[in-house]
Image 1 (spheres, rainbow, N blue to C red):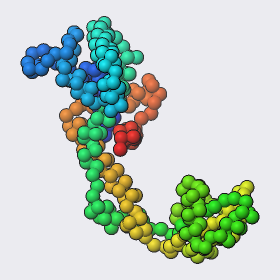
Image 2 (cartoon, rainbow, N blue to C red; image 1 turned 180 degrees about the vertical axis):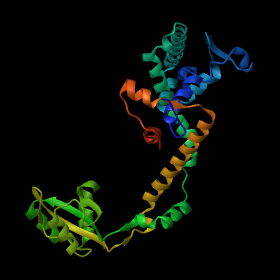
Image 3 (tube, rainbow, N blue to C red; image 1 turned 90 degrees about the horizontal axis):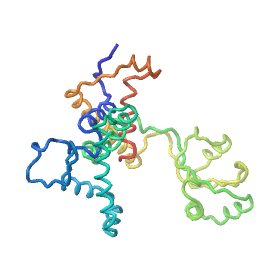
Length: 313
């Protein structure tokens, strides 16, 4: 049985559509017949069904990373190498097309996958990123509508300095306030080594340490206590009773939530528009029977989000 897809499987259909338009990225927008091309464009070369124009190759060079552009400027002979290797590559592709190599499964599947990897970042830049802007008004509205998300139990802002017991006793005597504690910790350690941030009673620390911390007042520094294989002194920088995190402490979290929703909404819109104009189906039963792979429609959207968004932001 073949199931008709009416939900989001854009990750598959995108690659298929791109591949139908052009077998690989070298041929994108360059395989039209001669009479369909504007006559005022200068041809770089034509090999079989593939025509490359000077302006196309210049656009490709302009898209290179800056460090690569500088390299080509400093070493003109590399330009010669890039052009000659490209012409040779298109020649190989045209030969392969004529001889049917591009239809071989071991090649065709790689072409589809590699083409999708090539165009995915460009689609993200041109069709998703412009919709990712978040203003402060949106952050405020999200905070008010979803305030329960920012509720917290009793918490304490905690920092720690580890060391020899005698050394820590001397340090504690030298610290006139938690400000001295913080300055010393910042000088000696990276933030991840001394700053626990705000923690609740459920924090992943020994119970006796948690009990000690929540028995202290803000601004206090503990005596040296056994901690793992060594000793440590803890400072309580701040304490908050049960309540809500203020907006200013939640901006980064809200920004990410709003931006991620905008990404999901935009991808959903792209998918719907795509499915209106494209016939898409996946033979779930055949895939399971012949390939021993069980797929679900829901996983397609999740996979698409992970691959499409990952590393692009």
